[in-house]
Length: 357
Ligand SMILES: Cc1cc2nc3c(=O)[nH]c(=O)nc-3n(C[C@H](O)[C@H](O)[C@H](O)COP(=O)(O)O)c2cc1C
Ligand SMILES: CC(C)CC(=O)C(=O)O
Image (cartoon, rainbow, N blue to C red):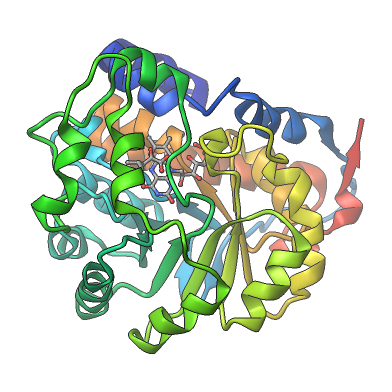
């Protein structure tokens, strides 16, 4: 497999049509999904030549944790949809590749099993459930298992209408469970209804869509872990995130799965980077499929790039080995893009490297 696209087509051959559509799909007309790729494609690199690139290094640290490259796995629910071992395979893969793994609140393996399989840094993603006690318990378990940060997803007061899932009547298969949450909170995710998406209905029942900036203090008082907000797309919200004690933001439109008309993450990134001005971590996800995409978002000022679907494709195609290959491939491609653009060190990757066509 020479590129991420090969993993994508291999995964399509392995997964059921319904699961494939759940993974690939976006909300509404899928315009935010398309915009993520289009924004990255519009950017081109202005390479510098005759620079000594005999020793390139992609290595970095993120919130104090060493990584082989500024690359992480975005939180995705239910990795067991892609391979039988689920998130323990992903944790093994991320460790092998020197990448960071963000575990979804809806992981299909326990936090403790995932931590046991991991050799690199782990973050835990949360949706704000009405049942607040479940958040407190998860945060405590994550800290005890050695997770290094909490990632609160703020672009999903509820799950958006995703036409592919409505058409297929998507529900989470009964044998694949969000094992870190009380079963009673999750039962409607498994209730199959023709012409309706169970996860959308579940989110309307269980997600607290009334929370505001003022509620963040409640969560911060109950955990010692740094809090990162995922789904920030504006300078205004980046400033509010810092004012409310966030240690970082993930610039993301949720892989085109939430607000259909949302700005592409690569287009939103510069204003967020400027607003944060080095005071906190800025990560980004959405449509990153090549080392060149990594170079582009780093040039726009991201500290960390995260990938979602490509990891699912790697898992589907080859379990832990497939997911590790995907992460390694992106790291190798970043190394090559750095060498061929005259940037032996990450600190040399600046906005001067980028032009839009
Ligand atoms: C199958 C799937 C499940 C996802 N589950 C979650 C989740 O549980 N929590 C979350 O914050 N984001 C979730 N996301 C969004 C990803 O974290 C991420 O924002 C997005 O996939 C990045 O874009 P990419 O897939 O184009 O790389 C999910 C995405 C996919 C494709
Ligand atoms: C179970 C879902 C809420 C996860 C998902 O599909 C997403 O966040 O995009």
